[in-house]
Image (cartoon, rainbow, N blue to C red; front, side, top):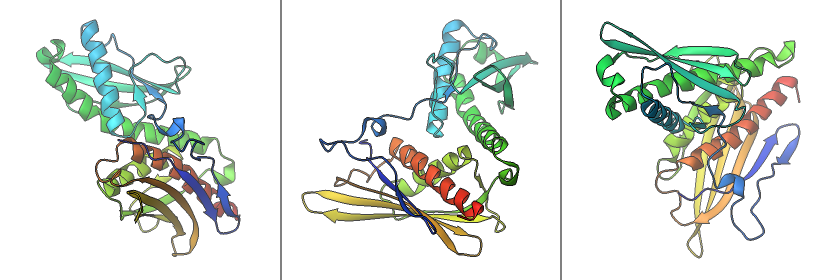
Length: 286
């Protein structure tokens, strides 16, 4: 999948359009930062507290990191000095089954939260390092860990705000329309994860403070090119538009007709920052 080079423009009702620096390179290619996966924020080290052999523990760390990546969590099993977070896994065996616990810690080793397996696993198959069981455990844990990380990110962001901003903003998300391929689904999933990391609480309630809608417009151009524009519109609960985040680029015809994969993650990460800024200014009366 080719990465989508982005020109991100943030607009607010009071402040006009603010350019964000994601231009093409002089040669016309995508910037290096947008042609690779986002840098890992979460490291999953092999654990000695799982009742597995060293090789199986390393394999499980890799599988868990991969399962988290599928949830748009920038995770890795590689050794990285002082990552923002580390995920420590442990196991407790009882009555023929194993129950796993995942603990999230910060760069200093402080415990930020923990979550369970969620289901017990057969002890014999687990201890034997059976590939299917390791994969099952990783896949089942990924959702719970991603939710835990989003909650921790949101609470840490709110804790760093002034007293007047301490209440996290709530937002009702109406989804994405108009994207080719699996873009509607991939972008919707990725933007909700990215917004949680920005401290924005996404909820279905009609009582949410703000609303967000994503629209994708694709126009065919000469020489087998396409113009792709993604517009995220932020409104208050009463329907008053307070700002938009627009992402625009030209790509080869059909580039986004299949799986968006890392493109959705990059788009969402950049857009979420813009949406959070629109909300911050609206709350501040700007």
